[in-house]
Structures are given as C-alpha cells and as structure tokens.
Image 1 (cartoon, rainbow, N blue to C red):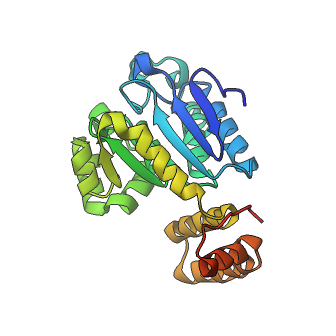
Image 2 (image 1 turned 60 degrees about the vertical axis):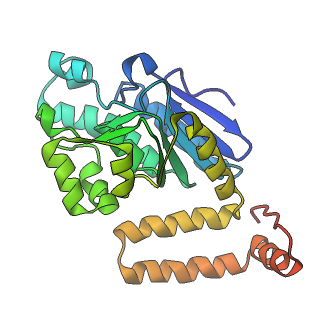
Length: 270
C-alpha cells in the first residue's frame, strides 16, 4: 500500500498498521498544511479496511511530537497569518482539529508508542489513542500557557478523563513537563519500557489485540468511547444491542467451540 506522504508514513503488516509522524529533523511538529489531509486519509483507509485490527502511532527520530510550529506562531506566518476569526476556522477547525478528530475516529484500537517528547498538540494526539506505551526517554507536557495560549486541541476535554481533574489542572496551569515514570504513575501511559524495546513491545501488544474477533473488537471500542461521553442508560442500551449482534456471529461460536475443545480460536470477522 502506498505511503500517505513523506510526513506521515503508513505501513501495513498483516492486521497491524503503523503510522509514523516523519519530520524528525524538526521533532515532528504537527499542524502543517498537509497534516489534516494526511491523517484523514490514513483514518479512512484504516476504517474501510476490515482486515486491519490495530494501529500503532509513533514518531520518527528522537520525538513523538513536539507540538505545533512555534516559529510560524512568532512570525504570524502560514496558518497563523490573518484575523483571529480566520485562524479559528482555517487553522484550528479545518486543520489542527481534523488531525485530532482523525485519530479519535479510528475504529480499531490505537497504541501510541511514545518514543520521546509528546508536548502540546503531540500530547493531545497521544491521548486520542486508546493506550500509550512510553520509552523511558519519553516526556509529556501540555505547555500551552507557557506560550500564552489555551489548550486548544482537545486536551482540555480528554486529559482530565485520563489522569483526573487535579493532575490535569496541575499540568495545564504550570506547564510542567513530566517524565515517563511519572506519566505511568499518573495513568497517562500503561507501561514504560527501555527505549530500544519500545516498538517491539508495541508490536507484541498489537499482536495480542489482533487475536480477538475483529468485528467485536471494533464494537468494544465503540462502547468504550460511548462510555466517555454517554449516559449510563445509553451505554447499557448500546451494550444490549451490540451483545445481541455478537451472539449471532460465527466468531462467537468459534470462540465457544475452541473453549470446549481446548484449542486456540481462529477468528475470521464473520
């Protein structure tokens, strides 16, 4: 399958897609003119490909993503040129927010393999993934206030749900950057591994996820996302409907047969 672009690499190996933010010389900034289209195209490819069961998102070089282009902000160039109302639309709603929405809208589980600093928008994008594995050299921060900005990329909505309001407030209000171990202690990442083991561990986790029945895997993700925004009654109603659908799948019967026959199931997404 062809690459998305030089700035976002797309590699499919069996049921696993690896997306790599690829501007290593600039520490992988996001929000460049092509990024919204790149991430949207990648998400569309993945969601339409029923063979894909898991995605790994990582960065090339020493950083996951250092966030937005501060140089362009200072120079009032490119995305930050023009009146504020235009910046709200062209830069945020139609560019940066499309990146975040594309990652959030992926229908299969997404692992962020955080290989280095994930700062500002980079941290927000990592949070849009379902789980995060960190290299021991990773760092995390939402440093918007330090450059006189609000957290404008979705982090104000999601980060408190991941690590709690008090800790999220501490990070937002101080602009502090925390190391990988602190991120694990706070629940921002599920595990910390030696830098050289990061992609191997991400692949192992992805492979375990891929062993699950693919259609029910996608439904489970939908239920978990509904649990973030929906009411208890809404999620319970969705659970009943999806569970009824799951009972009618061939994969459900294969799982039951494999359980009683003491063998590994072979799921086919039917």
